[in-house]
Length: 372
Image 1 (cartoon, rainbow, N blue to C red):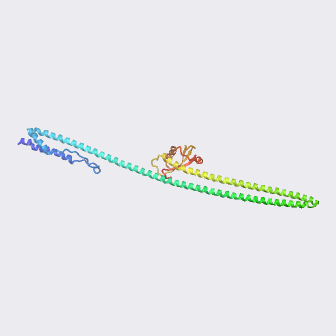
Image 2 (cartoon, one colour):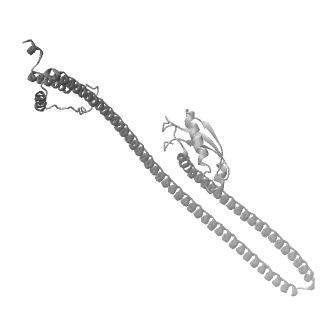
Image 3 (cartoon, rainbow, N blue to C red):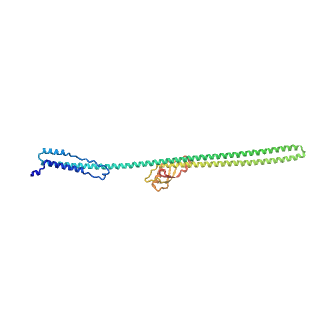
């Protein structure tokens, strides 16, 4: 009885090993580490070793038939079972470690995905802002073209009015000249007629005098001399009056010509000033666009920021000096605008020489985009 109590039967030994192994397997399947991100990511795949109960029992029965002494085989079976359990536990720990690594990798991939989405949204926003800025620039360009066309039309209309005025004044001047010429011809005709009448009268008087007595001849001769002197005096007087009148007409014509030249010079000066103003107005948008290309936006710059710079140029368009005369309140923004003007040198100067002279030193208002 005592020997039977010490030595377990092969069947009980098989059941014992089976229970130990089954318990280990159950523990390995039931124990799963809980992760803080269990609700965010799918559970990791756990690898497990499945033990076939029937094959295990068959192997144990076969070993019992081969080995007649169960007291020697049971400890070795238990040791094998323990080693298998330990190895199974190591495999389970390795699987858990791989699962944790997979969870970490999934987290990193999710983080990279969110960062990529943020970057794509930022790129889309920048693209949209650029398209809006281009649209505003096109609208502003069309508005300026319309204003330029209207200015040209106004200038053409002004030139037409001046030409009509000049033509009218010339026509009036010709009428006045023609009127004076006719008056002079009429006056000369009257003088000639008076002279003819006088000659006829003298001739008649002479003929009558020839029929008079010698006594009256002296009186007639004296009278003729007096009349001749009177006629010469009148002719001299008329000639002097004609000379004075011609001098007055000449001075008046010279005065009219001088006034006409002064009027034309004033018109030319106004047109030149208008051309210079238009050239400068065209230069400022070109300067704004060129400086914008070389401007680097500092961090934190707002679109409503404005700075006024005093720009000094050479006649070649080279930038000689740039000063900040009105700050935007942000020195970094002011310095970036100042640097952009230097980088944009040389500037495309207008063809008008007067405009170039005025642009030797001028104030330039700079602001981001098209908010000026």
